[in-house]
Amino acid sequence: MKRTVRTLAATMTAATLTLTGTAYTAAAAKPIHASAHVKGGKGAVASSDVRKVVRDIERVKAQIGRAVSDRRIGALADAASIGANAGLDIADLEALQSAATAADTTLDLKQVRRDVRGYRVENYRLVVNVLRHAAEVGAAATDAGNAEAQALVASAVTTALTIRATSVKALLQDARVDLEAAEELLDAEETEADPEDDIEESQPVTTPTEA
Image (tube, rainbow, N blue to C red; front, side, top):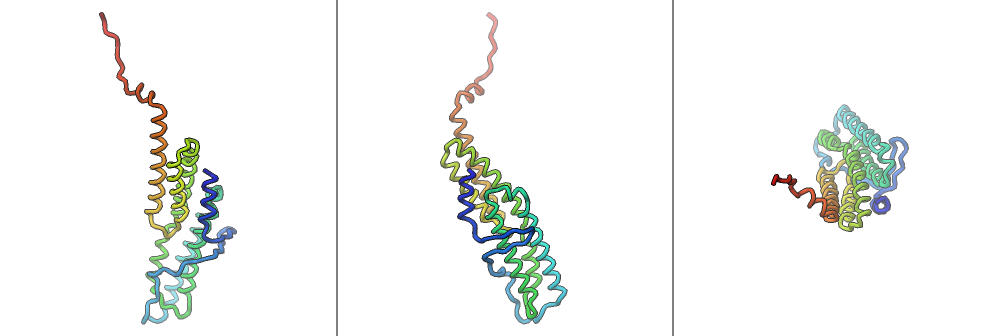
């Protein structure tokens, strides 16, 4: 399973990331969220509103930094991919911060703050849980030689490695469903391999009758 996960990690890494504490440099960044587009006709926004946006952005960036500095992530073969996703999230936030602090900005800062608060930093912790579970199920699938279960585990890992702080909950659920399906296959295979155990358990207990 570790070999499978490492291969997936190598192919999934979308950016080169350097981690030093909570400092990140990413090779790519997404455009500013569409919902934060410039709002025309309002002129420059109040400096107090800009400070609130900067405060919110800095807080979320720090939360992401702490999340991906978790030693559990460092122990995973997929640490580089998770770090790259965090780097993209931070690059998005920095682009948004630059736009919000520009002297002539006319961004709708209320919408910007809503966007920033929509970052689900806990996604990184949940991804770690999925990947650790995938490693366990994958090892069992490999030992059993069950190719279908291995494919489901690989699908779960691939999905998990696309998840960022801005990802919807459905992606995590998709990964979990794949792992549950893999476990069901392995359980069914184990039951088929030991049919006598089921027969013995299902037979009723009888007591001898007196003559």
